Length: 183
Image 1 (tube, rainbow, N blue to C red):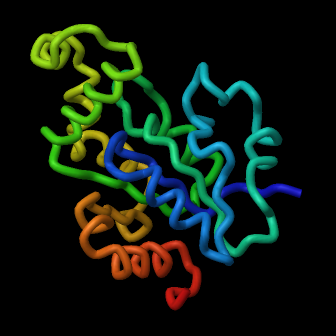
Image 2 (image 1 turned 90 degrees about the vertical axis):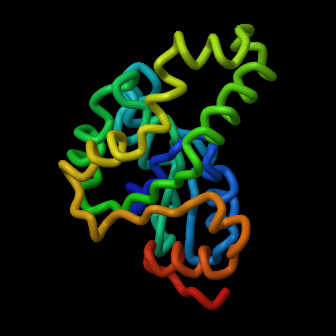
């Protein structure tokens, strides 16, 4: 019962991680976590629940098992994620979703504003809250993981690829996580 993931979608927030999680969950050889965002490697979120809790979120019989937590690429606000991840799942493959950084910031602000977690105008919010910009600093976020994972175990996908070239992008993702591409 249960097993550790073979791959993790590490972010970025507002870049299509929900769509990719959903598409991967429909593949017969893939088991995606429920709920989507386990945030297990975030200290103060679910890390304290322990490895058995984390294992219980995955189907051990599945050929590929994954989860998607955009908060994994929220350094420096959420520190220590790559270190904890590399210690527990050193052989995992990582998928990092990106999009135009300004579009990501705008989508992030719209999301927080519409959920009433933000009440400042976008310009003021972006200038005073570093989290909006830090999450769009893709090189910084990814390089933290590359200190622990070799580049060949990282797949970077652009949100636009998933939107405009869905079939080919999903085939690349299926190939990367080690499952059949022809479904």
